[in-house]
Image (cartoon, rainbow, N blue to C red):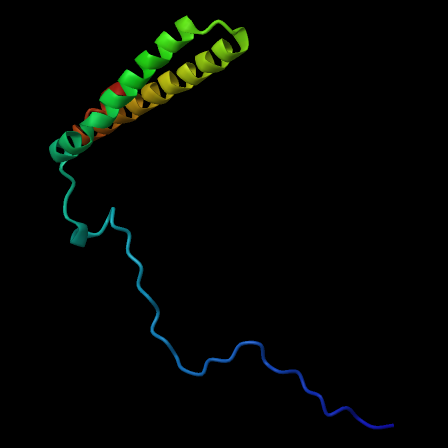
Length: 108
C-alpha cells in the first residue's frame, strides 16, 4: 500500500504585510470641527416646516376621504408622523438639558 503525498495547505498566507487602515468616527474627531447648533437649525429648519405642512395636507385628505379603509390607513400614517415628531421633540429637549447641565434637576 502506498502513502499519499497530499498535504494540507494553509488557508491564509500573507505575501506582503499591509499597514492597518485607521478608521475614525467624525462625531468624536477634532478634524471634523465643532458642532454649531445655530447653523444646523438655519440649514435644516425647513424640514420641520415641511413635515408640519405635510401633516396638514394629510389631515385635509382624511376629512375628504370617503372610503373607511383608506381613511383608517391615512389616520395611522398621521399618528405615526405625530409620534415621530414627539419623539424628536423629546430628544431635542433632552439634549438641551444635558447641554445646559440641568439634567440633575429632573432626578431630584
